[in-house]
Length: 97
Image 1 (tube, rainbow, N blue to C red):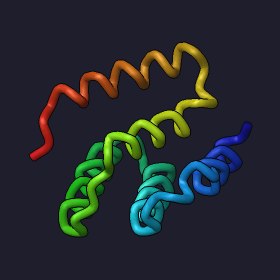
Image 2: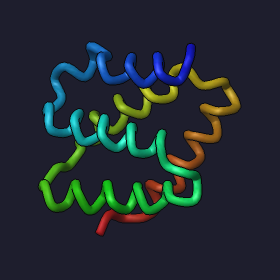
Image 3: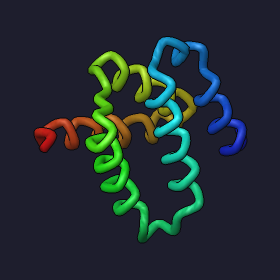
Image 4: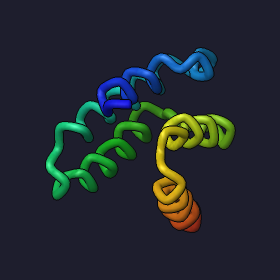
């Protein structure tokens, strides 16, 4: 599956229909920015996403985070999924500020 098709498919995944439209719009905007950004600028985009979420009082429930992770990793190779899961576990060790 091409990356463009994959991006479109996660945005229209029926499992997201119950999620707040503001959250989906924020994620879609973030995904577009991330795809267009040089690798050296991507960390700043993650920090900016975190700031936007705090300013908008948007919080993803654990169920929403699990669903998003599942959707975004389902087309990865087994090795890619392992790497994503490792990053997810490491990120979970740091409490949100």
